[in-house]
Picture (cartoon, rainbow, N blue to C red):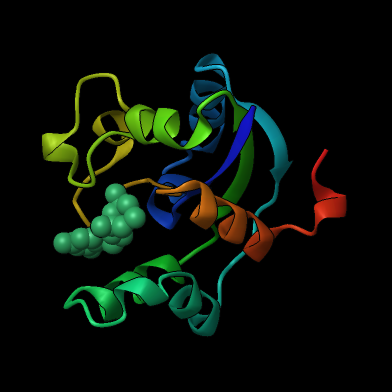
Length: 137
Ligand code: UDP
Ligand code: MG
C-alpha cells in the first residue's frame, strides 16, 4: 500500500462535483485516509506550488487556488501515485483520456478540477502539508 494526495480544486468544489469526485476515487480502489475542506491563503497556495514559482502561470495558479474552498484528500492504494495520475488524466482536459476526472469535470488547463501528487516523496510532503499524522485514519 502507498499514499498520495488529491486536492479537489475551487472550480470543482464550486460546481458541486466534490461528492462525485470522492465516489470516483473510491470506485478506483482508493481508501480515504484523511479529508477536509479549507480555503488556502495566498501564502499557503504559493508554498504548495513553490516548484512552479518561475513559471508564467504561477500568479494565476495561486489566484485560482485561493478563489474558493478546496478539498484535500489523503488516499491509500497499491501504487497510489501513478494510479491516481492515470485516474485524473492529463493536465489539459482537452488532452485527457475519456473517463478520467479531468475529462469529466475540468474546464481548462488552469481550472482543471483536481491535483494529484507526482512522486512518493512529494506525496508524503503534500499529505503533511494538510494533515497531522494523528488525523490520518
Ligand atoms: N497550470 C496552468 N497552466 C499550465 C500548466 C499548469 O495553469 O500551462 C496549472 C494547472 O492548474 C496545473 C497546475 O498548474 O494543474 C500544476 O501544473 P503541473 O504541470 O504540475 O500539472 P499537474 O501535475 O496538476 O497535472
Ligand atoms: Mg503537478
